[in-house]
Length: 440
Image 1: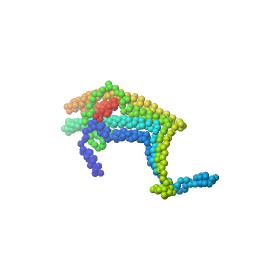
Image 2: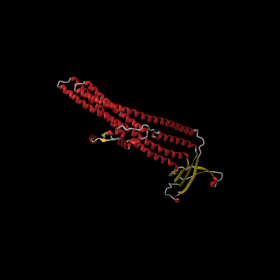
Image 3: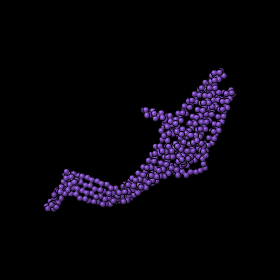
Image 4: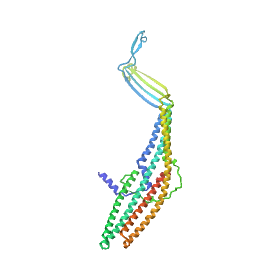
């Protein structure tokens, strides 16, 4: 408990760490579980290739056994072997004890499924490499979106803090006027109510900022109790080239589907391979000991005899008929392949739409930003003039409160328009396949 309390106290008193978007993205790529797991999948694909490759290599095994036969089997043999023609004699064959030790080798000479498996394994590695790239892009996208949302909440909090200070000054002026008999109590009460409302809004925004920062830290893989701050320089509206087109076939999402299609193609070939014959080589060398007692460490003088034997063979398997099972598997694999082709068509349409929608959103956001920026400036001028007029007795308190609310709304609208632009910017960069550039 003491250690936990000290660590929490240190986190609370530690200076806030300034995090740029580049810092946040690179931190996430190094620490977020999704990115780490995608890299492990790439590493694991190498082991899968080695596993498939092992099927083309010889298999060598050693074995040993010791067998005791308490009752030997009696075999009916012609009496001619024993000098008693015309009779049948029951004679035991074998010994009470047998012990065998040997080495066996098996090597596939031709197996179409092994060759197809090697090709599929290499494609699996490429699949996981593209998937790792796509996972990185998804991590970058989530971090960028949450990074900008933290900024918006903080801007709203800054605005409400400034509004609270200005409103408090006005309240204090009215309070002084009321104490001097120059203002009505209802005006002072209205200002106190307005001040409390602003304070409630401020507390709500503080909570929203904390929640959004926690979400950002989660997507970064950063400890939640780490204090952070964001520089304003990351939120400038930069001109983007909207006239450019993009080749969606080069995007990771599209490439992943193409790799998946290739894997289904090899799966179909693997099913077709069941029609092909297989040929393998087998070889073995064994040493056997037989006698009336356990042969280990015994000699012929003990009645135990040792001998060796070896075998070499070719095994040929030719499939002829299996109830059309292979044909059904091939057709199922073909269906998977055709379904993936449809997914690729749909993905291309979806990516094209995302690119065009992002450009449209960028254009609209730029117009909205310009309008809301002018509106926020105008609302600030109106608020300043109304405050001056109210001080001189030329405007009512209602006019002042309305101007104050209009200024807050206009400033929040501008901040929201800026967020829409930055989110659309992320989508446009994603649609162009350039999300990786955000980490540089």
